[in-house]
Length: 138
Image 1: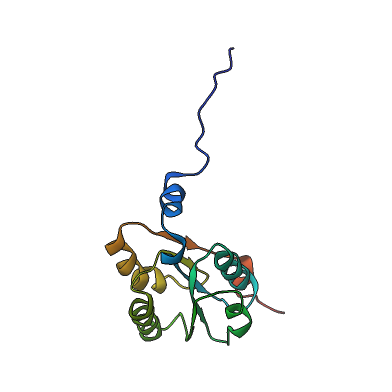
Image 2: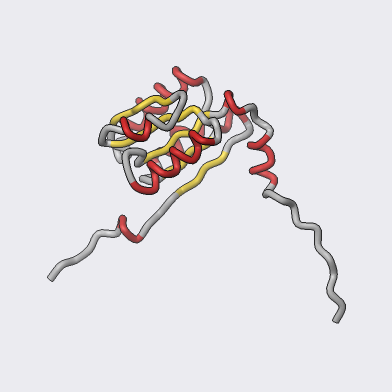
């Protein structure tokens, strides 16, 4: 058999689209932003120039230090009322939502998805971990 060369794009189309946004116009919403995966994700996005909406039950003060523009939203992402409130606050502050890194229940996808769909360009990342599974002792 003869090997054929295949053209592979350097990034998936959706990533290329996000790259076209100007740095100062991008807004990322990160849940679980006070610690762990959420915190590190927020720090990386801040390093890429994103303005951040940091969602958690706990203070995100250490995470906020990494961003030039950050909004802390304390609340329970499993509460529909809290999620709707946070979505309104993000839209009021930034007027947009380009990236949602969802480390929690999928209520966020629905609430922020409405904002993201109006823009036409956005990315949604759902994160799951075995650490989130309940365990049985005994």
